[in-house]
Length: 161
Image (cartoon, rainbow, N blue to C red; front, side, top):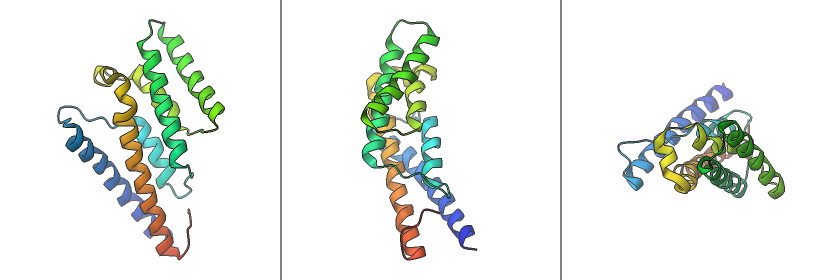
């Protein structure tokens, strides 16, 4: 019974979280024509809202994700063969995360999104690192803190599962 309740809480929090990302971007950036909910948000949400969440600090999430986004935009702008762009993007992202000891798995997806995405994402250029990447991940992180508080209330102490 306890796991059913927590599964429903995670389900509802995930829905509310993604609606907040959508409405925040609509309100702040007036992006009514295009909605930027990138695939990496799904990977981040799985890490946060699963019954066995992976705990990552806000600093690691921000550092890994923003640097990955910048790397992706940098290589997207280079006049190289697509295979080399993808290879160098992922390799550079991993190198930088290893150097800074800030591994965050969804950052790999964040890095290649500018290479694989549509013109609207590509036209964002380096703004992509802030919007949608950083803004969306900050909202997901905020909801992870809400989940932690609910677990603390529900169990009387912090619990991740």
